[in-house]
Length: 278
Image (tube, rainbow, N blue to C red; front, side, top):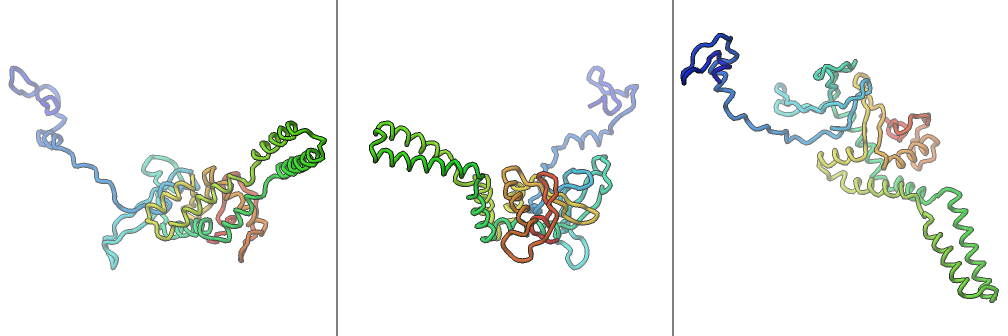
């Protein structure tokens, strides 16, 4: 303590040292006071908090909800996303640009609803999941026909029982291993359906957590104020790939199907390709 205040201790006494003081006694005593505990915000998160990213630099956007200090809504809160590169000495042409959260949140809310609450869409997904690659169906029919022929041979006493049972067991074992549906679509659709069951009654925090589970990133153009594209996690991408393919070719059930260009980068999807019009 003495050294920082420009003092030296000698035989139990404090005397002026030959070095400059770094702190005053008041500053030293103030620094010894226990710090106030960090109080984390109890505000509910915005829908895209933790998943919104900047188109220009690719970094995460911050979600802020400062208090309104003036005007008829004083005491309420703003809600917006901000590109925070200025705070980290990073270069981004959109550094410091803000965008009120209402518009991007509304568009992603509409997207989530169309994936989770549309019975027509979910039924369509299940029907598509039942369509397997041609080679799987060909092999299934081959095995089924072979079992029928073996049964006829056995009944005609041209195949002994032991050989018949052995061959039938072998064929049925292979049949049981052939997939009946595309499990990647089924699993993703069931998860989306579970989100839909709670979406309307869910808290903002629960909705945000659902978005964090589905989307690796939601890319925003902060200056143009548009949602550029979304990047789902791999386990949900089969659903997004199906959605894009059917919307691009106008085969998805329902009115007002857009006609868009399907040439896109892998794993990234525009809202228009997914049937959401800004």
